[in-house]
Image (cartoon, helix red, strand yellow):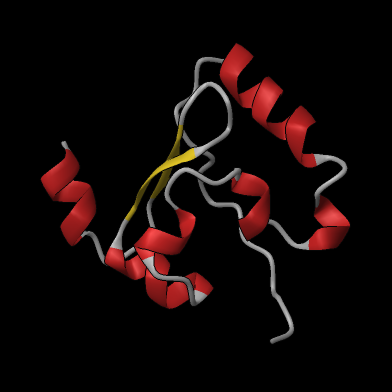
Amino acid sequence: FFPALEQNMMGAVLINENDEVMFFNPAAEKLWGYKREEVIGNNIDMLIPRDLRPAHPEYIRHNREGGKARVEGMSRELQL
């Protein structure tokens, strides 16, 4: 499971029940501009744009209650 995520060309981020990042693949490093070591153990909010942070806990709760392990097809353009 993890080797497939590690080598995936799409950014993959896994969080635990405390919303701490437990896995961050190389594609995620390129996407967000953080090294794995900077992200692992930190709250997922560090990767969420500030304007979306207030609503993000509700997205996570809804995702967990619905039994889905990921959000598919969700994208947002960000100004860098």
